[in-house]
Image 1 (cartoon, rainbow, N blue to C red):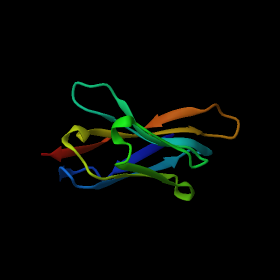
Image 2 (spheres, one colour):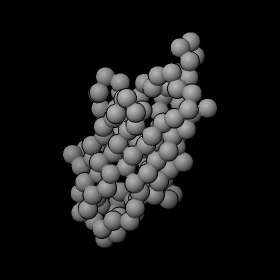
Image 3 (cartoon, rainbow, N blue to C red):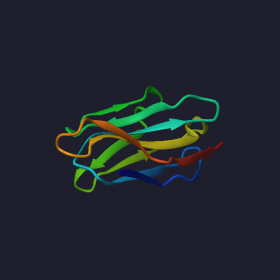
Image 4 (cartoon, rainbow, N blue to C red):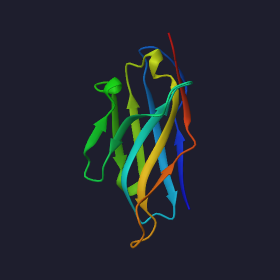
Length: 121
């Protein structure tokens, strides 16, 4: 069983910064991609950022230039540095991983429980 535990969500004023962390633990052989998604009330879950084992990154259009994703492979941890926050960034942020639990297992995905980020105007 795999667990993703997020931390760092908070209430912040517009223009401020936050850093989210997500630590993976449990039956993990290897993690391929790790990333962040978010879901605002009444909206669908959307991609924020992903980072591959190679270090390649992708970002949602609305966060490009403001958010930075990074990864500590040795600790199976992913971070999201969020700068210049705006009220539209308010959402529950979910950590996501694509991984294998054993060397011969198929790739599977895992989600964290989410952490609330609220940006006040």
